[in-house]
Amino acid sequence: MRDSKLVLIFLGILVFIAVGFVLHILEPILLPFVVAVFLSRIFGPLNAALRRRRVPAALSILLVLIVVSAVLFIFGSAVYSSAQSFSAAVPRYQERSKELVGQATGWLVASFPSLQAQIQQWNWQEVLKASTLTGFLAATVGSFLLFFNDAFLVLLFLVFLLAGSEEFPEKLRRALDTGNAERVSAMMHNIESGVRRYIMTKTLFNLTTGALVTTLLAAFGVDFPLLWGLLTFLAHYIPSVGAVISVGLPTIFLFLQFSPGTALLIAILNGVLQFVMGNAVEPRIMGSSLDLSPLLVLIALLFWGFLWGPWGMILSVPITSSIKIICENVGPLRPVAVLMSGSLEQTKPAPGPAKVGETPA
Image 1 (cartoon, rainbow, N blue to C red):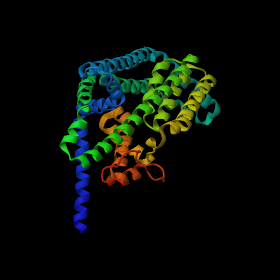
Image 2 (image 1 turned 60 degrees about the vertical axis):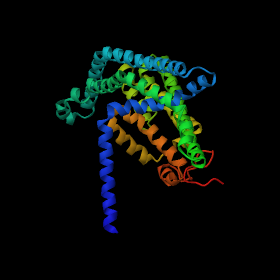
Image 3 (image 1 turned 90 degrees about the vertical axis):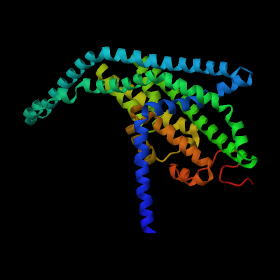
Image 4 (image 1 turned 180 degrees about the vertical axis):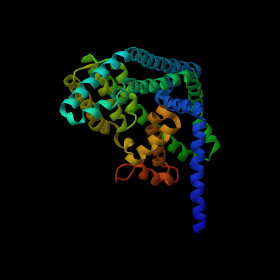
């Protein structure tokens, strides 16, 4: 018995490694597919509304594709223009960083005369080189721009997802007997509505937070407010860590643009704004759909970030939340949803008909 348990443990480890390897190798295909799945959940209601108005299926899908293409084009254009402006401003930031390093070195030498030789030997220009940070940001932005080269693949997957979603319930009824078909259909309806509600609510909330940050920074004349707003929009898909990134990274460049007092004021206002939105407003809006264990969020962030880079980090929590919603609505997997939750309250399934694995009352 003990040997069989060890075998199962080792098999589980091997399966986990194999799945991770496959996900990493198939990133060029799976990443656009996952993005297309989330887009289909967001724009699916639009397609359904057009179909209810007796718009032909081909025309409704075409209209949805036009809307999605416009959104992707606007988003990609904003990222590209911000990246171009940022690259042009790198020399100015480099000079400002040298000036700040010189001032800091002079203050340290004046404050600690006994350490003058050691301080002057330190190569501060290399340690605090602005191009290092700007290079990191440029590489991150570049990864997003490269992803938009695969926009055609995303749209292609989206066409098939939208085209197949309408006929699937009827296929399900024909494939299964009446009782099982109703239970499976109820489960899939609850999962789909839960995932769609989470994705749409989270996206609209992040969009609102990004717009507020852009407005705040633009009001103070901060360089590239649109870039920092886009960063906030994307980073807030990652709980806790995303807020640190969306507040910390602009703060560094605030001190390169403004005086320390002004930079600190803007940074505090930005931090307070995002803190209130993330800790007071978001929990009321999202409810239990964002109730994930902090350790699970960290593991998911590391796992998907290692597999798919920055896009994997952004998609890590939506993917994990979707898995939790699925587990909540599948009877045998309900304990997994409880373990994934971040609170001690019992994880409850979404209201609706009986779930798979349960007997209707």
